[in-house]
Length: 521
Image (cartoon, rainbow, N blue to C red):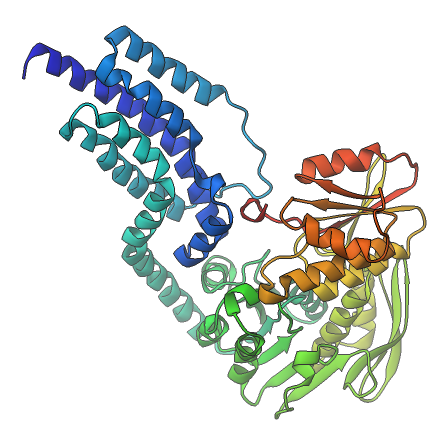
């Protein structure tokens, strides 16, 4: 190897290291974030890529390609200057705010290591090809970030499976040592997190109760709760069970063996991954089937739940007299709700700070569980007055220039309609900010058009976020208020807030209906 070759190798190594650093902190970090938002499933991540092709192209790599041609034509000072400028520009570029940032878990750290190794192999291969092709290898390393992400995920799969199995075994051993623990499972297309919080609050009046925190509703989320939080002092364990595909809920049930189950609703949520409503119904009923002869609490206000034949142990709740537990005389104000709870043998008045008809239904189901588990009516009345809104679920937030009704956690057809009707009950200038609904499969366009129409009926101003859903939301709004200037489009949530603040009014009531993570906008 002559002196020129040595100089070339040194220069290539320096430039390659800079390029590798930029890729790891840029495109690979972004794609890992998107993979995490898609629950580490390559199939879901591929669907994301199909809908967001341009977002996954690292345009810096194209510019880098032009610059790295200097490896063949340029001089050492020119190459060094280009590399320095490139990395400085990358470091100084503004970082886009993320609504749900990447969570750097141990799994993500392992993924980063594998991604780094795979990318290094691509970059280093430039030393073994003709110099004229070397810049292409550097550019490909950035352009192939989505492929590297999926490949690394596949490479790590056996390791992740082994780690998962060890945690699951520990959780099973812990549960087997607590045979008297009462385990209550909760699932549904929507409402399960709220019901989990309400049930736990009511049962806590009599029992030492643990619930899965936040939205820990996957097998690993439940396993983590058991391993880290469950103690021999707990008497009741309330488990939220989520699903993206058939078998997900059964897997959790096989782990915890619930003695009772609550089915909060069935609807087209995640229809995109489930494909058919029959699959959704069958998956949600995996909990009810697992309970066997135990108590099964079913929301009979849900059409798909009501359509199934009753089995042994079924206890129904809702807002109609044919339910075992139902609410009547429902009254709502901006300060909260009141209703009469009618049970099998009695009726009594309840008051809550919570807003919305769907929350009343959730509370009726929670009261049914509490009464069946021996909590007294007086304790329920006291606990009901203390129950706070679950974060980002019709949560009232007073701001200096407006009142915000935060319903941003998630959105579904029934919940969105209830939230908008709640907004309509407020006095003032009513504003809704929403990006619409997703993962509704073939029903997505139809439901978003309906949502646009409801927004136009219930709000004075509607700000639709994101260019993808805007046309269909606007179509629905136009069916009620054609070409109204109060129906607006914002490219992101930050622009939506700017538009909201520009509205001249002193009494603004703002409903935040859904807040999609970055992989949907």
